[in-house]
Every structure is written in structure tokens, then in C-alpha cells.
Length: 88
Image 1 (cartoon, rainbow, N blue to C red):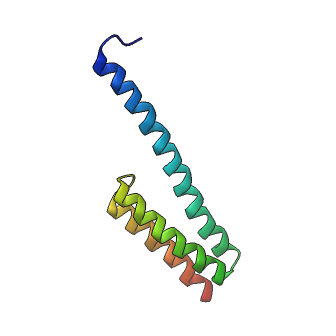
Image 2: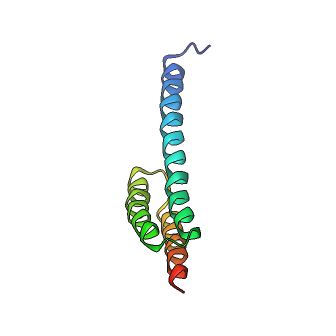
């Protein structure tokens, strides 16, 4: 058990941060999964709608500091490519 005030505070901060990151990590995976499942089912309209939500949410995660800007751009780009292949 921690004895210093600063270590007690750090423990509190770490648990909060861990919970927040777990939420965002799960949300991120589910968002990407919704687009990929719609794309794999060749349902263009559902994929486009899921992509609109995913794009907004992924960029919101960038502003929160959960993922880096380049990671978000890469994910969005790959999801967009997946959707564009449906029509082809």
C-alpha cells in the first residue's frame, strides 16, 4: 500500500485513465468492426452509414488524445478503400 500522498494520487489517476482507455479501445474496435462487417457483406449503404459514424468518432478520439492523427488517417483511409471496393 502506498504511503505518500503523491503515490496515492497517482494510483487514483492510473485507475481513471485505465478505465477511460479501456472504453475508448473497445469503442474503437467496435466502430471499425461495424464498417468491416458491412463491407464484407457487400452492403454499400450500411457500410457508408457506418463509415460516417466511424470517421467522426475516430477523429474525436484524436482530439481526446487516445490515438495519433496519423493512425486515425490510416484507419479512415483503409476503411474508405474497403467501401470503394464494394462497387468494383
